[in-house]
Length: 159
Image (cartoon, rainbow, N blue to C red; front, side, top):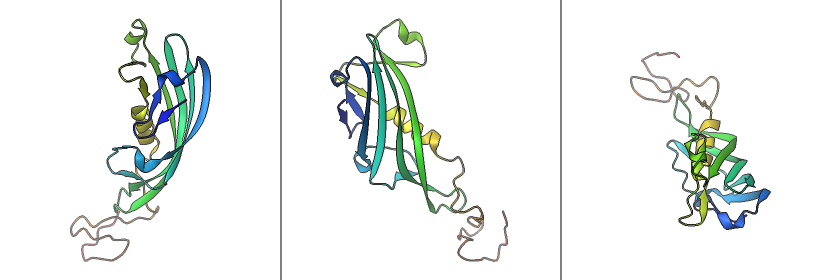
């Protein structure tokens, strides 16, 4: 399989019929992640892809392992999250299958299958809902905005 890192697209003509498994080491800064509040912190991510090609469909399964920075939900300090994002998507060029909401159309316009959106969605779903820098994070003061983990203020708010 041939993967274009900058768009996370697979050249369709490089996917043989049957099942193909391949591991890719992705330079994280080359991919336009565009996930608000999230940035990559590992230089390289590991993308494992298991693609099954039949006459009318492509089934893409796999995972991305990488480290990302997210903001602490209380103090906004960057927190490292190591994730394994699980990917599963079905694509088809059979018009009869496209009525199924779980199946996405294959566009042959540029000869590639873009998997950036499913990988991005998998990353978002793999991140913690309330990431914290520590379990005892005291957060920001709602009155003056100082980080109460680093200094005290006269407002005395407690979480």
